[in-house]
Length: 140
Image 1 (cartoon, rainbow, N blue to C red):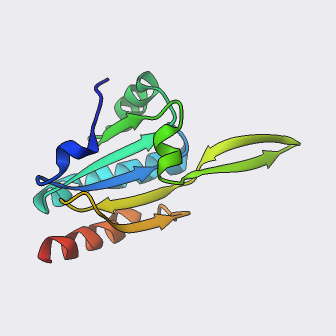
Image 2 (image 1 turned 90 degrees about the vertical axis):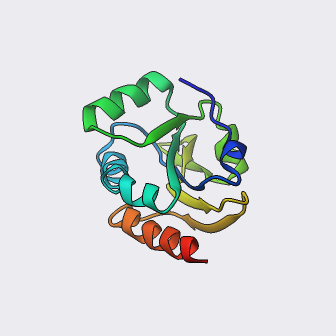
């Protein structure tokens, strides 16, 4: 329930910013749980993990509590941040078009530069793949 400004991490931490479609869906829960399970390893590499969806803060709190998540979940209810990162896609189902968040991940370095971007993420072992990117970033 606090505003998060990515600029506040510049010079301090690398950021894993991942976008996911919805709280409380099995695949989104699996992905968030993997990031939470490995959060200490990311932290040891000087990295913070931020998950973003268009769900509201109350939904995030329920999702976090239900699945024992430790990572920060951010609400982008109006989709402004999702649009900035190009992760909104239109889908059509039964003649109805709607906007959906494409599962995507960005690794942002301490200078605020996007160093890695992945769209249409396969959430299985995704946290481990992103951890490899962060670990290499720490070495450079």
